[in-house]
Length: 371
Image (cartoon, rainbow, N blue to C red; front, side, top):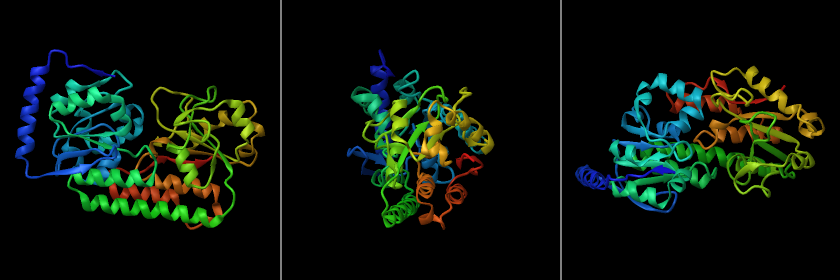
C-alpha cells in the first residue's frame, strides 16, 4: 500500500524536528476538526501543501496562486483518471507538471519517502486515501511532522461537502471564499431538494453505470454513495441502493428485471480505453454519443423502458465529488422531473462555475442525452 522507510528513521526524526521548528515559527496555527472528527493543529495559511485529491475544489477555494502553494500531489488520480482535465490545467498552470508525485495507494503505492522529502507543512488528503494509507502510514507522516487533514467530497452529502470546503478554507486562510462557495452549494442543493419534494410523485427506477469498461462488461454501479446518492437526492429510485454497499457491478439479469426508466452512464477521459464512454474537456458531444450507442445494443436492453422512451444519458464522472457537482444533481433531477426544473439550466450553471472560480473554461462533453 505504500513504501516503507526502512533505514530512514534518523532522517525522519531530523525532518520532524526541522518541520516542527518551521511550524512553531509560523505566524499562526489553528486547530481544526476534519471530516474524520480528528482535531489537527495546522498552519493558518499553509504555504507548502501536499494535495492528493480534490484538485479543482482546492483551486476554487484558494483562488489565484493556489498551486504556487502546493509542493506535491498524487498525480495518477488526476492525470490518469481525468486526463483531458489535467492537460487543460497544465497549460493554464504549467507548474503542476513539475510537482513531486507521491503516488497513490492503488497504483504502485503511496511513497512516504517522497512525501517527507517534499517538506509540506500540511497534507490535505481524501477520506478514501486516509483509509488506504492505514494507521501505520498515517503515523509515519505525522512522525515526520506533517499534520494530516482529511476531507471528503466522495460521500456526496451536503454535510461533508460543506465541512470539506470550510476545512480547506481554514487551512489555506481563504475562509471568505470558502464560505461563499459553501453558501452557493447549499442553496443549490436545497433548491433541488425542495423542487423534488414539491412534485410528490413516487420515485422512478434509475440505473447508473460507470462506463469505463465498455459495453461488453457491466461497470460499477453505486449504492447510497457517489452517483447513487445523487440519484436519491434528485428524487430517483436507485436500483443499486439495496444491492451494493458502496460501488460494484450489478448482475445484468437484475438490471433487466428492474426495468429502469432512466439510465445514466458515467463517462470520463480514461487514457487507453477505446470502448469507454468518453467525456471531458475538448471532447465533442457526438463522440460521447457514439460511445454510448453500443451500450443500448446490449442483449435485452431493447426491452428496457429507458431505451424505449429514449432516456439514456451521460454525465461526466470527473464532475462527481466536486464543489460544482450540484450542476449534475440539477441535470439528473431535471431529467427525472422536467416540469419542476423548467427554469434551471444545469449546463449554463456548470459553465458559470468555471468562469467564476476556476482558471479554465468548461468546454467539452459533460452532461447530455443520447438523441
